[in-house]
Length: 367
Image 1 (cartoon, rainbow, N blue to C red):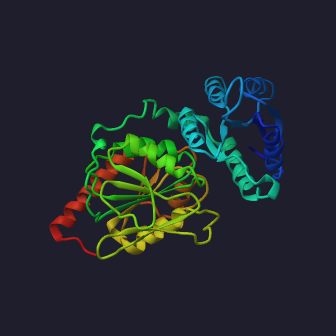
Image 2 (cartoon, rainbow, N blue to C red):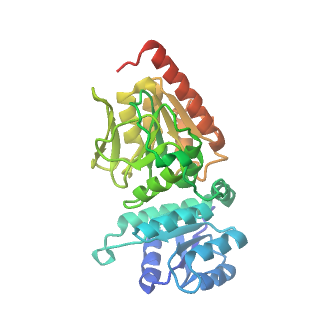
């Protein structure tokens, strides 16, 4: 923002949140709250009057709710929106719908305010506000536009397929912009995709299960929130739960996912670095590492470790990323063998995994 203050409008029907969120934001001297509004209708007037750089938006409000306000903001203004989402199944469902409509990102609504347990949420919110202010809304709109069709369940998904042990693993690290990017890419993978997929998506506790179920509805492959002991199976994607780390362990009777509560790595739990390093150790060249849109540099070191084992490593390109932080960091350290637009990633994974599977069938899988 060229050393200018990032100007923020807070839209929330809760008087407590209209006081608390500005307090959290203004801990950072580079961010200024220029106004608050109690519902979407007032919020639209304040956007017209104050011209903020970023809007934080509650979804559950009287008169004009956040979803309708978001549609209007997307249509009328070039202002990034960060959704403040309720901790509930309905809240998670609404949040993913808001991301599809063009919201930049979201944070869970602050809890335990009386206990002063706000430092981490404040840091996260300010980071997302600054990233939103720097981001071209064109990339956010494009990411949202890729999924304009209603989610439909593939007709064969009613019958659960017996899936086999995976001899190849695709490990994915992704953050801001990830829900839409994954919802575009994963449905392109066929039911007989030969690799197991492990995903670290930076997301708070309570949202990953709803996200996995949403993806499972629209994918031919199976998608679920990971649990310790889940088998790594061909044609199944496991999404790391919020506030856990995801690793892989090779076992004689089958390879399994392992969740841990180890310390945050570079401020993240889950961390893409943890996943990538584990996959590098256990699978080495029989893996593909993919780093996608997101803030910061999580995953760059781990992708480098994968690259050094001979695994294929891929980074999403700048033009198709909502935030080109994580992919850029990986590319700058020489960790990414290929740099691909979002619409080329699925076909590349299919071709590479099928070629690797053919080699393993021909020469015999190695442990």
